[in-house]
Image (cartoon, rainbow, N blue to C red):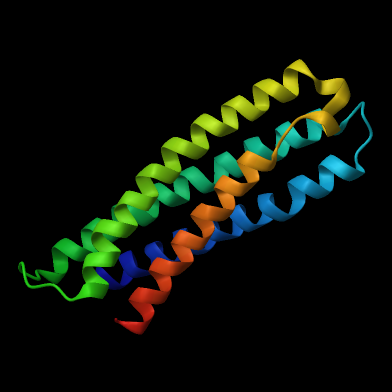
Length: 148
């Protein structure tokens, strides 16, 4: 069962990071390239698909990670990499779910209000937040893979 949970953990991580990367790259391009008539609709749709992919995959990463840590049965003397994975990774997942969920709703609402001028809707804060979470996730993956 541990092997299956590791598979779920890594698959969820790949989907989560992939969806973050896709939105970080595609959303600014859409904002510059789309026509004023369809831009807001397409950007809203992209954010909805991102949320549909990233949030469940983050929950899978969290659930499978908790299961694997419980199965490892390590006491209070955990190495740094395991502490980083357990505490840092868990906190990043919960924060990412909350913050990206709230910001996605706000961005979609702004796109609804100014859908004729989608290029004027400020997305830099949203994209920066997603980028920060991506860097944090990759940092945890680095610490765990190097077993620091």
